[in-house]
Length: 309
Length: 272
Ligand SMILES: Cc1ncc(C[n+]2csc(CCOP(=O)(O)OP(=O)(O)O)c2C)c(N)n1
Ligand SMILES: [Mg+2]
Image (cartoon, rainbow over all chains, first blue to last red):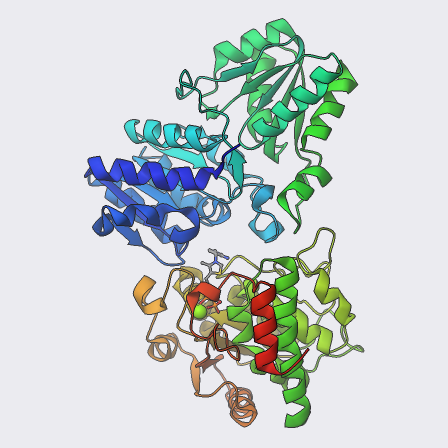
């Protein structure tokens, strides 16, 4: 099966957008080859600005461009885009609701060998607590392309969380549809629903197959938009299942799992387990090894399902 | 330590930098190779750091502000005997002490966890302030990248260091002219360094050949002699130094040599 990293799909989609839209300006912080923001230089080099290793400055510059009518895409590694420049994002992009799309790559523990200093496990939390910030995490190439095109149409601040590693293409069927804020139900089962986002959608699907062999059929949902949450879908899942298990490559604190808990504890209380980084820093290692060690792989999901089934 | 012994260690460190990134199939050889001689002189001649004082909370300290160059730090610490050389070949592996970027909690002799650029100089300011508070003679050293100087925080730290007259602080600038996306002057020109640091109140020391031990020692001596100001040694380095096909190429910033390239590089060094 074809594999592509969501950051590569970002580069491709951004290039296509820049070909047809003159209002788009792209910023990067010395990582344009890695985040793939540099791909659009083929079609509009004059609209790509390398801001150097200066993420805080880059985000406030993005705000200035947006205040002057530009649609800005600003990229770096998620650790530095969100971490280093947090307050600039909060006050210069979030507060005035600037039209800036923060497209950050190398998110989560699957960054791998660089280790904990580069593995953001708190960026979803940091971004979703900013009022008016849309937060999206595509799970594969086609979804990343669709997400980039969707956020380009949206006015206002957005955070798109992209991965370093190549992931399998699953959203390539002709009837695949991406709609911001609308979760995609991938498998219909009973009792337990896996609510996954980003690269853990693939682990959830693997877990589904493993469980099916043993006669257990669970529901699998791809929650690509973490803010705004798809309330209708989540409430319906809570009504029709005994347990929801959230799966994300992020801290179990403040992430997508937390967001789902916050919503459902008020709207439709149900038991929820959270799979994610359990309030510890990561470490160097290969992405698959890390997902296994920190219990975010298909095996860990299967175990969690069996524990409640 | 005499020059001959340092030459021998330098050769071994270069080989280790190449081997450890090769076995990890990741890591940053370019910016590690550029600072080998500087690091050897620091750890074997300039700083007072050894088995006996290693665990002291205060002593001469070193901060690798450009934390991605962890291979050069780890290989000099192994040469000092702080951990077995065999550990180097577990670099970046799951469960290893030698993390991709320096982790002070897991490696003996690493004085600060780094990896996010622009913060190490501030940390070194903090260490130097503590030494001033406690009226001791310990010195703090910090290695920064030229691309790293694009971070505004470097200049915030520079202002603070001069403001508090931290003459016990010595920064070393690895001025290799390259960052990830290309030449520093093309990506986001941070030069001129000498005039900028002078204007910020620093004693600026130009080190023309940072591969010449006499020149390196002289630069450190000048820094020690200067009172009332922090010092910065501007080292005109070569990224990828010592391996002809890696020298002055930004492509070798964060890419490990494959087996074939490793073999060629080791042959060039004349080591196994
Ligand atoms: C805050 C931050 N932003 C971005 C990075 C990614 N990064 C790692 S190394 C590097 C380039 C560093 O260039 P330079 O300081 O010149 O180092 P050297 O040439 O000595 O390797 C970048 C952008 C980072 N580690 N930290
Ligand atoms: Mg450099």
